[in-house]
Length: 113
Image (cartoon, rainbow, N blue to C red; front, side, top):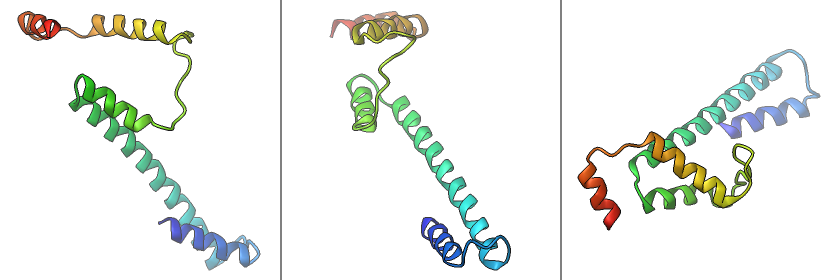
């Protein structure tokens, strides 16, 4: 897909960037198709990460997060807070509010281990 878009763009430029004709038509068809495909793949990556994280728990969750985020720019500010510990504490409080155990006994067992 990318090769075709790059090739049609190169041919279009070498032809003097015509505004009509078969070279222009091929150029105009290739570029949006390539952009659409890239957008779809980006969404797929986001959905894949979401699905993967839903299947993980505990340390596996964080290992997966780190593997996807390695080398990428990380957000340094969340809700106006820049201190790592405060961000983590707010995240923990949020999870306590929204996450409830299925079984109180099992939850207590997991906390003990």
